[in-house]
Image (cartoon, rainbow over all chains, first blue to last red):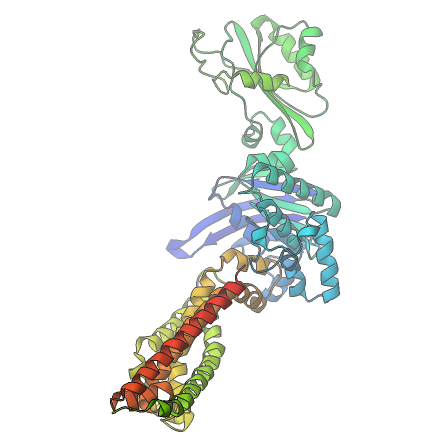
Length: 356
Length: 219
């Protein structure tokens, strides 16, 4: 478990003091991946460095796997760091060492026997799928492979906690997906708690169980990803599952923004509205995808004003959250975009995506 | 007046030997002392392993002091110190004192520069992997900088060769002494030419070897 309580970090002193983190609270349970997202300069990396003890917090507490590591003296800090595996952006491998030697680094520092080292390194490289690349130098590996070596190195001392600081930044989409899949697998198999620092929503969508949004050094929103995407007013939820541009022709109809998540919602809710409730529903935009292991969707639909109550009743029965969108201020000619609504451009793909 | 070619070799051969011994002895001292000084210079800077403003400022000032005097002047200025350490002010052992004194700050700066090229993240990876500062310095910083350090070493050896020639003027022996006492004071063109050719060949061999080593070390 990673637990950060009321963490403050200020760089410099006096008039040159530069506060970077304010009152940050964060908890990541074993067997889960917690993402911290935010724009660059929000303090994400400083938070990471406070958790892996490369930086001392100004105040507040950091607990890793049950140990309060905040005030440890330098000597014990080194032992504490061994309980935390860190995967860096661009892997930070030593260029003059082979993949195997890089993975062996933490074992060497600890001083295990040569035999134990050899056995463990082979096991780790096997674990990350690089058993055949042990003798390669980092320059001979692809970005994704280097990151896998970085992960193997981070796992060398069997930590209970893994810290990934922008580990997939700079990787191509396929490599990103494979690295994230590996992290997911490790979380389950080794019961790890992973703190995932990232600026990519895609990464959160793909693997995170919980997410926290860091802005100007403060956690402005946090919670389980499932809950966030189910909340129509969550900034994180909306960033994870953005509203698609809305088809503009909705004259004489009431427009509704729908948010849903979970197994309870039938996947064929749209056709059922027509078949079971006789509602003539216009689908204006929609996205549906699996997030944190469950279907989550956002949609904008329109029905005649007189059928509004039936619509909300039917949707409410399935657990779909519906809220009315304001009418366009005046009748809009068909060739001009409608002003309000989540977005205002018609794209055929959007609707098609929704139907799929 | 000019030395015959058949008399040249008996002059040149021991001189080369003296020069090599002088440079070798000085380099041992320079590496042994200059490397730690360079490591401390680098790691006491902000964002490194043990940032320490006062330590860095002091050390940097001392290093600059050692580097600011032309070797000839340094050599003359520290004669009392040389006599105290070496017991004499002439000969090979006397030359080793000023050469080391000039070489240590020179090499320390080269080491610092080489270490600065290692990404800070590599050092952090070492720390995060549970390495002590000493472990990280040895297994990450110095190990990763090895090709650059080999290059620094080449530069330093050539530098020491030059210093050894200058030290020849105060009777340190070696090729420098030969050049001064025969070539300069007696206008002996043969010896002068021979010392110049010898120095050129030595520098070329050192540089060639150094470059090969750097290439071998780079991955």
